[in-house]
Image (cartoon, rainbow, N blue to C red; front, side, top):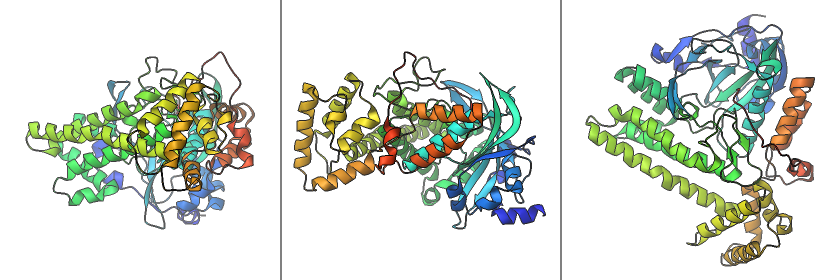
Length: 491
């Protein structure tokens, strides 16, 4: 079978518009070959959405593409250059172990990046081996698919293959490659790279490309680059509010991990919070709590300010006016985030309309949850099910008083209690990817080559708002431990 025939059978319909940007933004490169690739996970639903045929992808030719052993017809593989503030320190970065294979054009005409992660050394590897281990790749697969099911904009995971080689990190694990799907991989850090090492013309080309790909309405605006900045800010405010509302902690909110499409990207030291504590940090390297749960909105604003700085030459010909326009746009982030958070909290408590005292109601509940070490997800699940006795706060005077205020607020709205319940059910997931469940799946995969635990977990997480009996066991909390849960960069 010819390469073109196999490409057509699988349904690949590839183009690479990013490769038409100035060459300063990338290096053309093919992936390194895998010795003995084996497909361990395939996201058949996502494949269908992309216009791909699962049966062909499971075959020898499909696996060869996922493993980097074959470049499909029409592809232009490249490593992207970018920079970024990592824990506040600016560095030159780039795709150190990933390659943008090309962009898949779906039957509906939508365009998605297809990226291989763990596909070998690139010019941006910075002494790294360019490879990835199966554990971190499966973590990204599990968490990104859970985020998608929760309705949170995110990159997706199409497949994971093992490569037939071992990877040495803290332990020895099977090597693996993740196929990541994204609206694009344009980052705040991409613009920082352009502003620091590119020309004004190259910066403008990147901005125009971003507008054309994600914000076409900005092209019609009399100030297109101001509109671009405002639009990116709006998407990020909504995205981070969604994180907060489900207790998701990204863990590594560096500027190179903020996608201008408004998607969550990079699932390294991420995790979901169990007991509510605003100071929660999971990342083993975040010793100062820079990326703690409570700091995520502020870090989002900080990252966006760095993005605004890169756009200054495009915002206005006068520097003072450009700075003024940027500051005005950034100032709008906090208000937009706050609006989305309030709206989301009203949904979580089944509240329609707005009352001035709503925010105090929310804050008081969270304070009670913190004081009683109440589980974040299960508390809202119990309230949704009408079982306040299942919360850690039940029986306390503070919670009794809070319940009375909450019920009085619900009683003042015209909508029925049934409508309130349905709103809560659609706003509060019954299950999340609990950290101990994720770790069990990764351990089974790494030590026993058993991927069934991962597949079952992803299947259960695919409908987090179902509230079915089958989900009950996945609401259980981990056994008490004297060791705090820690995650590690490794994706």
